[in-house]
Length: 267
Image 1 (tube, helix red, strand yellow):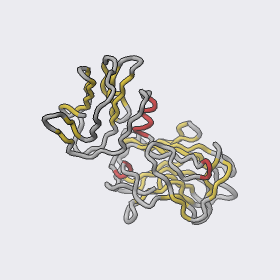
Image 2: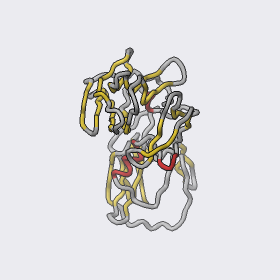
Image 3: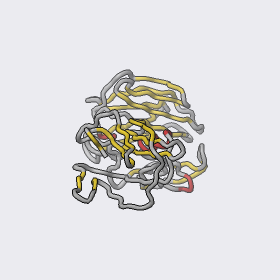
Image 4: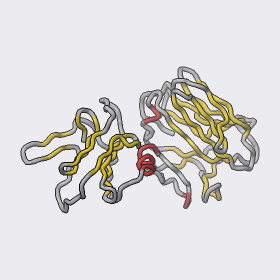
């Protein structure tokens, strides 16, 4: 729950309140953890601990659960807002597990010849054209040819539509045979707005791009043919585009703004 526009959790007479003030019309990932082994309770905001305190041993054996409301015998106080992806788990999650829940949006391993999202949100992909599966850098990989790609039948990428919202994209890539101009990661809203986030030119040069009223980007190396390369692309307003090759920073744009579309996106 929230109290005075901050996260709040209470178990009997023990309570903890977060330190961050929440703003209206903004999505947050929130979590509450009770750890019986250390007798502590904590609240987490966007994957980071926001408040923690000691707590007595949990003694409840049964009761009623409500979502979106505080209920007692005299009144019910309801949330004026949205709730999504509610989960209850019978373990005290670690800091790394909570951060993963809050920040990992999609993860496709392509193992077992599958487009199932292995991340926490279940955003499964749909293949168009002749997408095949073969031995990859780690277990299996998706193999693309002319006219083949993976996308979605709806626009699941909410945060890519928010101006200046930070993001990270990482993948293994292996161009085969000969170079040709191609897009590795493309984002659009269905019509009139799009970004070629990661592209390879006809000479094999990798480029990471963004939109801030015009296309801006940084160039990477020539991707070697018939060899795996790990690519990382991060964005924040303070650092701008940062392009990583095999775990090492290769190029930076410096501070830039991201003029996103304002609506959820396809990828």
